[in-house]
Length: 158
Image (cartoon, rainbow, N blue to C red; front, side, top):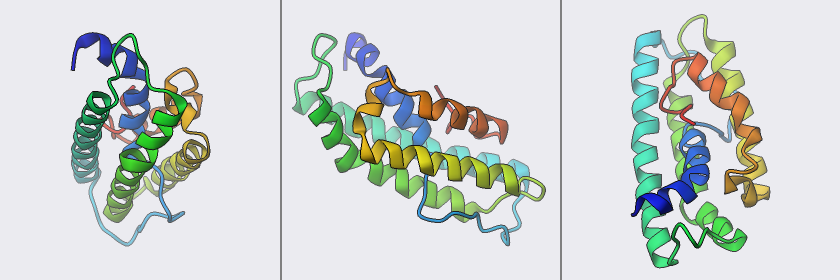
C-alpha cells in the first residue's frame, strides 16, 4: 500500500487499532484469574498486536479490492462494509481475549472501566460506522488514555 493511502486511512486504522483491544459482550472482567501486572501488560499487548496486524492486513486487501487510494478515501458504505466484515468481528475477538486475562490485583476497577468504556465506543461505531472516518474519533480519545494508563500501549495507540 502506498504511503499516501496510509495517510488517508490513518484515521480509520488509528481507531481500529485502538478499538482492537476494547469492547465486549461482558460488563465485568474475570477477576478470579490471578495475573501479575507485568503478565497482563505483556499478554494484553500481544493480543492487541496480533489483532492490529490482522485488521491492517484485512484493510489493505479491502483497500485494494475497492481501489482506495490517497485520492479516493473510503465512502460511508465502504466503512460500514469494512466494519461488518472484519473490524467489529476482530475487535470483539480481541476484547474477549483481554477480558479472559482477568485484571491484576488492584487494577480491577481501571481494567473494567477501560473495557466498559471501550464497549460503549464500539457500540457507537456499530451504530454509526462513519465514526471510523478519523474526523470523528472523539469517542476513543479517553479510552486510548485509559488503555495506556493500564499499560496497554499497543491497544491505546493513536
